[in-house]
Length: 418
Image (cartoon, rainbow, N blue to C red; front, side, top):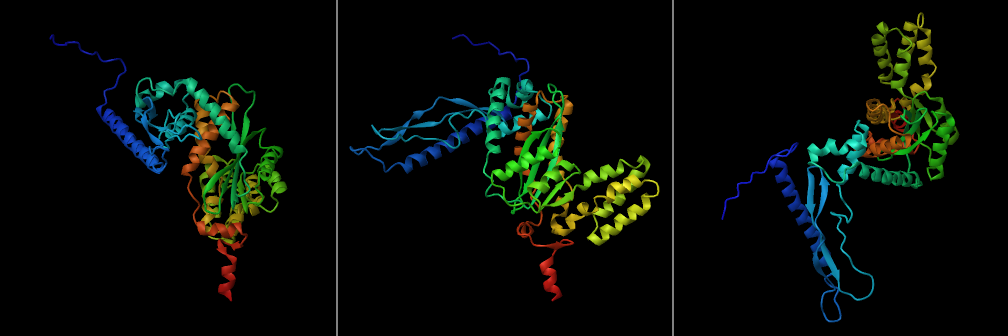
């Protein structure tokens, strides 16, 4: 027999990675073992079903064809066992794997990764090239055509989410903001209205998300009225947002009992804009002393000091601060553990920092529809890692309308005095 002397040449762009090959082999074996255990449990649960001749009704019947699942370590080939129902009539008993759904071609982590990559500046047509180094050359199920199909699925998810029932939901606080994204194919930027709420358990979740023409009172009213129509009957105790008058007017009409808390981040920027740059560092420290005060009295004293210091020359900066005195200091009437969360609309700002990066990097999304779906998927993915509110035991008290003064429960204060 002649010796085979054919040497395989290294392909251009190929990466030799024995470690990844080992990981894929191990993953394939673990998946096979897990699915086999799941299948054995299925057979055991139907072992008592027998035919008239005593034979088992549900038995093993080979395997489905081998298919590749795209994972974070590249494609992994998997195979699912099949079951056969020997009954001649009646409803068929079939085996459905929770580990390997019938039509799955990607892990859920990759589905969550795609909108994030898009918002990070990678266009849909570049996904294949961008992920080839991580997932292997010609990674399946990530082509531009697949992305287009995913966008259609995301549209369905968004519509279902917009129609969900809210009758069982209740929120102690809500954060509101409007984000502008300029699309390349649209004549003007469309505003995305975002509403995030805090549940009695301290968990933050997305309540409302829709596009509107600017942050107008009418656009915000449409969003709030839609939430009430779907069952959100209990008014939040407090709302946090910037100085956009449209939201506050719509809030007073939809939930008149909800208290207003202006965002200190936006207010600080607005005040500093009315001061020369040379004075902004010192002014910023003075403003921090106000909202970091231990109680309302100290905050009002610090605000008075600020006014006396800057009013002689910069009356517009002082007026910008003083006019919203009450709504800036409202957080003192709520639990002290929540103050860090209530002084700013940062829960929304931090999420949309990535969105703004993507639109600047790519000079705007292709269309408003694309931007809306991608942003929705990004926010839903980010919501899984949102930090819970501190002082979770205080939130049910807030929801029930218990009064607080300077961060301390008023009832407890009365008892101690007695």
